[in-house]
Amino acid sequence: MKELLLLRHAKSSWADPGQNDHDRPLNSRGKRDAPRMGRLLRSEGLVPCQIVSSTARRARKTAKAVAKNCGYEQKVHEEATLYHASPEQILAVIRGLDDAAARVLVVGHNPGMEEVAEELSASICRFPTATLAYFRLNIDSWEALSPTSQTEFVGLWRPKELPRD
View 1 (tube, helix red, strand yellow):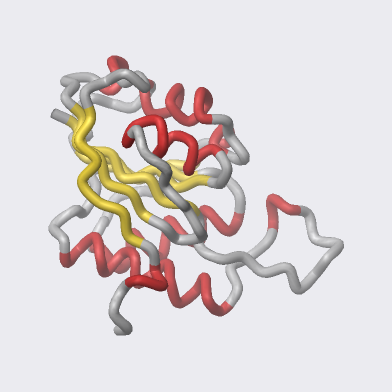
View 2 (spheres, rainbow, N blue to C red):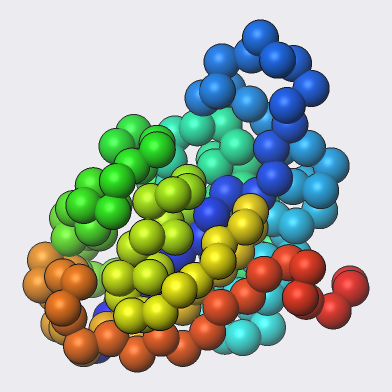
């Protein structure tokens, strides 16, 4: 049994219209929501064994804020192919994970994250910024993950729907 957490990066800033997309930082809402999602993971008993993030600044900052606030004390792994990845690319990254990690958090971007969540849940999952989806997968190895894997869609959390801190 494996557990997969999918998190779209928190809200980013568009204050500098000439800024490279990869380098956009979090805005004030993103800086508020990312730690909230980390505290949610801690309170739900869902601290990941491994965190893998897109290399985009907004995703890395989200992953680090979540890690700090959920009690994750290892290195956040950065994966360049998660930057604006297709569902197939996201699944390929997950399939390459170390099987020693029973629960993994992947931080990435839409539309890919939303599409993977929809494939695994067999339902429509609206995925605004900082949305977190939780799946239990009936697989023993990450390599075995496919859209047809037996999956339990456990939960979906959006920052706007959480109680205020």
